[in-house]
Length: 250
Image (cartoon, rainbow, N blue to C red; front, side, top):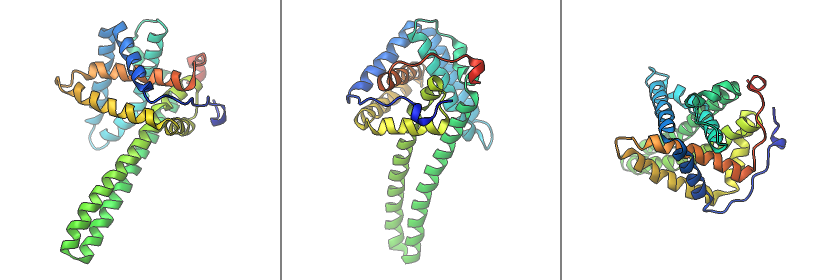
């Protein structure tokens, strides 16, 4: 277990660093595109299947996303080291530090719910105030409340994404506790905001392009983003330490 004070400090990054991260992910994908595509397909199918579970599927899929992301990161690490791409590596997040990765997923779920609750409270309070004042005011306040709620939700969600960007790597490579990993990741991202503004813009565009050919582009985008996360960790925190034995970190 690693305390927050023992985690490596984040380096300052140039704004275009994320382009090199995406290029790193593309190169890793090209080393074995067939197996990477199979991994991405399994990743998407698992999350889709979890989402179809009645009533709680959306929550289970949110919890499962960081767990599978850790597996993708470890596959990317193996590929970068010249080792073969292992399809079952997608489940390495359950083999190593399983409890921490699941707890990270629970934090993701709770963070998403809190963001939605705050946004709903803002929109609901504006609509209620408008209804008390009068019908004309209700329309204006409701529209303004919805817009403000959307902005607040987006800001909170972006903050959550920044907290999650490095967290799986900090757990995998440093056995950090989930809350420590989230805080350290958020600080690293906030200290390099221009980089993550460019990264968010790139991922937004790439996400739309990946969905155009019946969503088949996700079979490429998922591995590329996994490789980009791997490169981002190395670029921000330096070379990773040696991984402990799985039995020690379970």
